[in-house]
Structures are given as C-alpha cells and as structure tokens.
Amino acid sequence: EVQLVESGGGLVQPGRSLRLSCAASGFAFADYAMHWVRQAPGKGLEWVSGISWNSGSIAYAESVKGRFTISRDNAKNSLYLQMNSLRAEDTALYYCAKAQGQDPYSGKFDPWGQGTLVTVSS
Amino acid sequence: SYELTQPPSVSVSPGQTASITCSGDKLGVKYAYWYQQKPGQSPVLVLYQDSKRPSGIPERFSGSNSGNTATLTISGTQAMDEADYYCQAWDSSTGVFGGGTKLTVL
Image 1 (cartoon, rainbow over the protein chains, first blue to last red):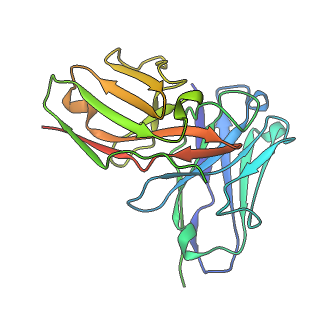
Image 2: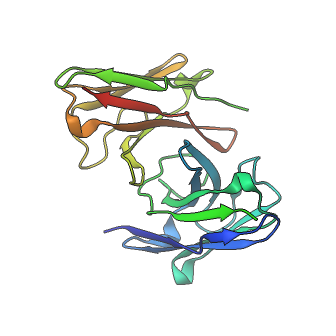
C-alpha cells in the first residue's frame, strides 16, 4: 500500500523558515515525480511545487517562487520542502502527493498524504 | 495565469444525476483531473485524463472534456458522495486547481 506521511509543520513567525518532510513507502519512490499541494483553512487546493524523479526538473507556483525549495532524497524515500521568508498567506495544510510518472509537469496526484499544518503568525 | 472556474455549489437528490462543470480556456485540449475531498480528509482522485476511473472508484463517476468545459457526472448519487470536488489541469508546467464545488445530496 502506498503511504505518504508528512511532518515538520508548526507555528512559525513571519519571515522565518520551516522545512517540511514527506516519507514515502509502498512504491518505487525513485521512479516517480512528487508534488506539494497546500490548502489554506477553509479554502481550496493550490499546487505549490513539483520535482521529477531524478531532481532534474523542478517547478514552482508563482506565489512561492524564490522562497520555497523542493528537494528529494531517493535513498531515503523522502521529499522535502524548504520554506523561507514565510508569510501569513502561507498558512495552510501542506500535502505531498505522488505523481503519475517521472515528470512534474503533467498527470494526476495520487495518492495524497494526510498533510502537515503550517501556521505563520506572530 | 490560467484559471479553472467551478460553480461554488451543486445540489442533487439521492439517486439523481449530479453534474459539476469546470471551465477554462481551451480546457478540452488538456487533460482534466477530478478530486473528491470529504470534511477532515485528504483529497482522493476520482477521475484522471478526463474520464478514467482509478481502481476502487465506483462506475457512477464519469467525466468528459471538450471545448472549454470539463464535466464530472455522478449517476445515481448517494449520500456518501457529498463532498467538495476539485478539477485540475496543467498549464505551462504549472498545476492549476479550480476553486472547488460543494456537492450537497439532499
């Protein structure tokens, strides 16, 4: 069974940094692109970033470009999201999701983890 | 930037057919994906590549995509189908979600 478990969320002050992790199991992690998708409280879904199977292709939403960095460690079956210069509008539940194939620019998000909550507030 | 537009809410009686639309410029030349999210739960993929159902998704879920509109259709809607539904597509290497539609079964 495919499992994605996010961690690393918490309360952080504006302007500070936070690093999210996603531990994957039940599939050949190194063969698939991965994504981060977020959902602000009571709001809809927003794609944040995607990374190809070998980290050779990376994409970001305009809202996080230059502040967030996605990475992965295939040896550890783990996905990461380094979030710098955090803003109140980054407050959300952050999900990691498995991509359909090797590239981060197409395909479905399936499955999703349970999410980790990031709250940016002073 | 590319936008996908969904109706905020759709209501349907049990056993009837619910249709949820998703509109975007030339959406029909892209693939549309649909996700179901129940309160307090993570999203679940219900349709991919316009009309394909993942394993475990009931046959009552179907989809189409043409022109500027993709449609998720739920035939014989059941109470368990009450949820938020999001459409999604890719544009210029960016993932785009619609604003979501709350499906009420009453």
